[in-house]
Image (cartoon, rainbow, N blue to C red; front, side, top):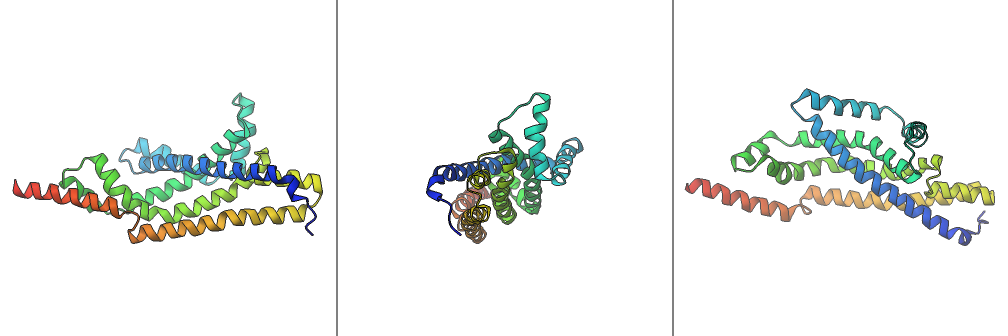
Length: 239
């Protein structure tokens, strides 16, 4: 079965692996930032702020990622917005996964009890301080399970970028197959590479989730906030 001279294709495979990781990092970081903005918009008291976020989320949750890739790479070119495979691929992943992450972040932020906000305000913390030091750390623990799942899913979805020759793993596999005509062997090996990427990542994220849930990852920050709260409470009591 193994008749492909893999040593001849080591450089393209390494390039494909690096591009896959690059798309994953760019796509996830961009989607997380955009998703957080959309989540905060959804929690606004103003309808004119909530509506665009809700519309964005519903639209992109109901469009296939492949269609978004084609629109970004081929469709925008027809109106003069030409992008390379890297830009189009990363942008497609960002706009698609931001819709899902926004729902996760919104649920996590809404899941923090209102009493936490009220207590922080009673201690004299500003709205920004309450958000960054009280709400976000607790929302992080609630958002981690869903966020971790979508990170692994995003990594696997980079394989769809083969449709625009994005030079990631699946594109390199296609090129090797056209050279060797050994499709079964090539794609089995590439599938094993994806497994070698996704499984350790999922296990590492699961470990991180357990650590954060147990409080180990947030202990230093918690201690600082607790000391600050005690000092502020003591000063108010003495006054």
